[in-house]
Length: 310
Picture 1 (cartoon, helix red, strand yellow):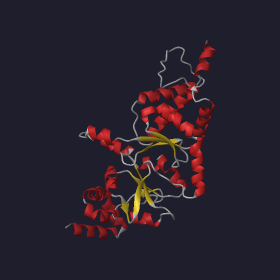
Picture 2 (cartoon, rainbow, N blue to C red):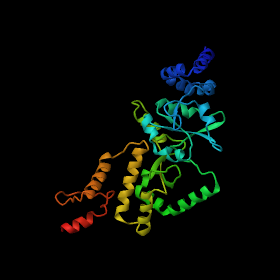
Picture 3 (cartoon, helix red, strand yellow):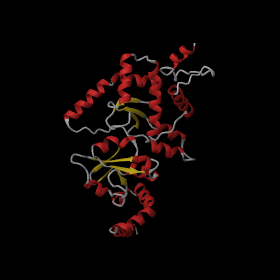
Picture 4 (spheres, rainbow, N blue to C red):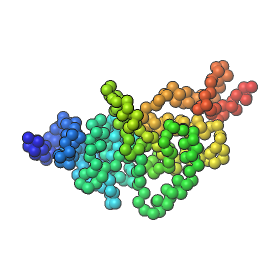
């Protein structure tokens, strides 16, 4: 029976328009079959279709993806998210797009489960680009440049880690970003931000499993970004600069959002943004007493404004 079904799928796949209709109706069933049926997993994987950074409005098969892989590329890159629009604008794909590397864009919750079982396809391993361990540099010159950048930002990474404490497991200089200042990546064997969101939405989830599998967060900074460069200069000049801590928290919390996580304390994040807006509008807080907690030091310029008023 199963053999006959796979033969029928193969026959339908020979007509692009017919298969597009079939896939729209039964994609979840195929992915569930991959998760549940190890014997036929590789065969079912041939029927998978995904949007990608190079497929435009069409969807691509894994076989077609492999034909477009760049010379020396040894992995099939993919990223999961809540919607197609969200993954298309994900900071995780920035450097890969610059290097001309194609990324599969997955927005179906079943993709997270299916990809846990599908480790490789036709000898090419899958690489989730939202997890740590992504190395894109190939030639020695590029690798040397990255090592120099890591050395230059070593002190900044230490200050960021000291500021954020247990909120992050590590702070590293990465190579997956081109236009964003930083991003939150997760451990290779834990949940991604998307999987964590899916599991939190399950009413009957096990809290014990959640604490065990919850994302180990690593903050990766972009050493070439102007914000990171200016922050590094501030740290080198005075690591106790009272603006540094607030800026680090803002970068961390915005990175949580762009990386697909939710904020534990959205009101605290909003308060930081409001203070930045007040500073930009030259509004002081003399008429209302604002309590500054230890994680929210005065922003640069606030103390000067207060002195003027006094």
